[in-house]
Image 1 (cartoon, rainbow, N blue to C red):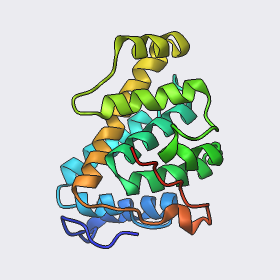
Image 2: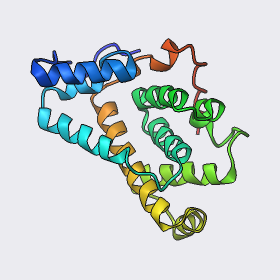
Image 3: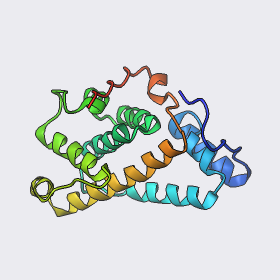
Length: 192
């Protein structure tokens, strides 16, 4: 659970603050700490919301694959907030919860298909600094997903990096969304 952030949370005020508060509570049951921190720069917050809403209209790549990719990025970067949210959203969207809870240890887990493993490997390779995506890795995914889904997956992983790295750098940690729904704890990442 969150203790304190590196930039203090701000009180959401005014009409826009009321809208953000209402939407956040409706979707999550609480005001999202990233919104409270980003409130200090509303242009950044608004842009973040806009790209997030736009990405929800992308439907060429399987939602489960995108969810696992985002959680793999969050696990690699160390964003407990995004892992918690991803698991919570998986429950609310009817995704496979056994798989979602195993993402932090996807290499050792036996619940994932070969394609799911390739997607999470690709997400981690995109996240590495410098990126370690290979021609072979991209070709295998392109062959299985097709160009439209591959482009979408790549953009989604890039967006996951934006959110996870932002939250991790600002010290935003899990708010306990999954625990509030009595979901089993996420599997602990395996040591590398």
